[in-house]
Amino acid sequence: MRKHPIRWSLLALLVVLVVAAAIYLNPYEPSAEAVRAMQSGEGVTVTNESKMIRFEPEKPNGTSIIYYPGALVKPASYATYARELAQDGYRTFIVKMPMNLAIIDADRADAVVEASKGETKRFIIGGHSLGGTMAARYAAKHPEIMKGVFFMASYPESKGDLAKVNMPVLSVTGSKDGVLNRDKYDTSKSLLPADAVFYEVEGGNHALFGSYGAQKGDQPASITPEEQLQSVTDMMLSWLSGLRP
Image 1 (cartoon, rainbow, N blue to C red):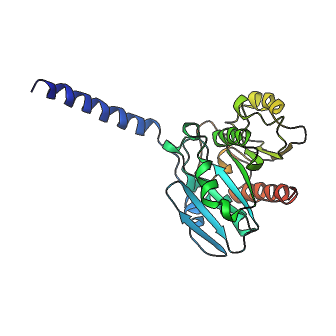
Image 2 (tube, rainbow, N blue to C red):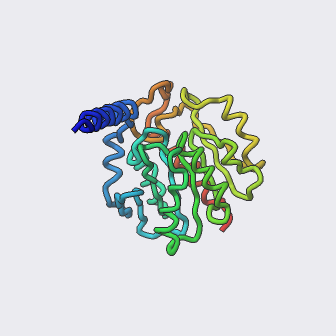
Image 3 (cartoon, helix red, strand yellow):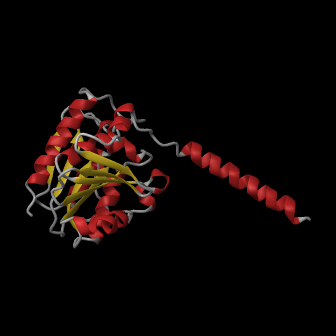
């Protein structure tokens, strides 16, 4: 009988910790536009699965894109971008991360590779902010699988060193980004191949690489969400079309 008060105290403490974590790790929710982009139609079938959101084009071109979300951003927040890529023939997978933090499971792309390897000729991986950093880790570990890496307001760290990996890299930033650490971003260029492609969206900010509203610490964009979406998508598609088969 004496053990019960201790047991209940521990249980109460656990509940408090879980609630506190849930409040502290309150994720950014997808915008109304992102929610609409989650609907199937116009040549794209959207499937919300346990470990990923799949955007399946009517006529896939054989390339699958794996997208890691930014920290504490719900995956559906990137549906507007994923739909644009899928409409151009690219199977696109937004990966769902534990507690919406890619750093907890940087190998989460394994599930996508396993689920789609029979229907994919090549995989391209990348992501937004922390998601891009963790995607680079995965690519550095699996150069035999990944054939390209893209960074959206992001950069690699030592575990994602791509300088000696024969892999195309695209890095996109926004001129109004108030979240990206510019010093670390500049330093990290030594971890990228010499032929990495860099592109800056004039007037774009950090949050508009997704669709989830304003982000703490960010600067206001001087362009519309639609303009940033178009600029980033156009650059991404141009880069993808130039990759060797």
